[in-house]
Image (cartoon, rainbow over all chains, first blue to last red; front, side, top):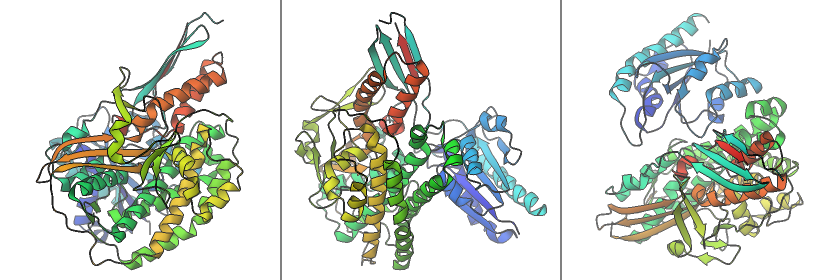
Length: 162
Length: 431
């Protein structure tokens, strides 16, 4: 049976809370008991060593974060980072993390260290600005149910291919 | 004499936090202008704090920075407790040191392995370095994770931790958690010592510069949370006397305030701390460092990366010592009674001195707040180092070589632009 790791990236600021909010929702739903796959859920703030530590031993890693791309706020993005990652898509969105290496560098580092799950996907929600101490915007809040469905669908699809 | 005009731009400096740029103008073979521009907009955190309760401050200021939230919490709680006349006692003092050890380990390990070290080993980035030095990079990431474990132990989560409060901590972890953590940290002590040996053996640029180091100094301990504010040119003051010696001023090219000591640039951070506190290291940490054959105090700014490794070793050692003595207290915090007044807190963030000043009213609401982060204090020193370093390298060197050296110098300080404005685009103009 495959191990799945969900990493919610975020901060306490505005729409950047999305990753942490998804972790909270999934934990409240008791997602670990509702899927057959061994599942770990972690909230992180930066792309770097902590993410590599989190997905050690996982077969599927799902990174959830607020992203800035060219699509309207609230749009849920699904980007395969590994294998067959589309680097043009990776470069077209910017995950909203700081004090960290970027997404491309994280994937390069994981491959250099041979510490990468079989499949890594980024499920992001397009957002606008994230101001300190602000709550999440209406488009970001409205996107949360779709974000949860996208994460569950990714787990189901991967487990089905087990 | 070179009469041609040369412009070199570093439009965005990679591997630093925040957004800024460096402009370099070279005229007739001399530096005509050098400006480290910070254009990240000021975040005006101090204004956000006005009118808020003292009780909210530790969690609010933690959000100024994702990499050094503990430092912001510590300077804030010390300042507020000085107003309330509260001594939280030895258990809280020990746990605050432990909390800070976690942040030093996590921040220093990140900077060494993912941000600065590729410059010294001739790689463009950390992934390239990891292909050649996988063992060392894995070791670094493991050390970083241990730092996060310490922060999580007391702060519930590793980023934007929430455990610290005025008077102590919101909870005391169970002793079994402390034992598990202590054993993990103790097992990593040889890794930290190996890191010090490895970095000391690297072929660093052999330069010497005159600069003033400023740091806290405690009568017995390597400084974290408390001590007098000292420098190697005779400064010896309390944090309340900061304003009489340190001056912030606005430079037109930067949104961050520059801070000077008696009108001159100065260095804060790991190298300044080590230069002023080498004798405060315990023998278990000092002996392996001294065996590397480097004289302290050091005048080579590139020894900052080595100083970070020494502080990782120290912080691990200190964390194990503190956890050896861990017990669950009757209460994890002491009660406080708000009162009006002005208080100061100065602690050693990973990047150096972090000074806070708060004025509270009788209900403990913030009337006024001032925060001076380490990157503001190092900014003039970085510009001074840049001038000296590229003059020593030779201004007639190709633009790419000058750009690389400038980036290396700046990253060496681990600047946190977000904190300072709260970084790099290099433009070199030659004429």
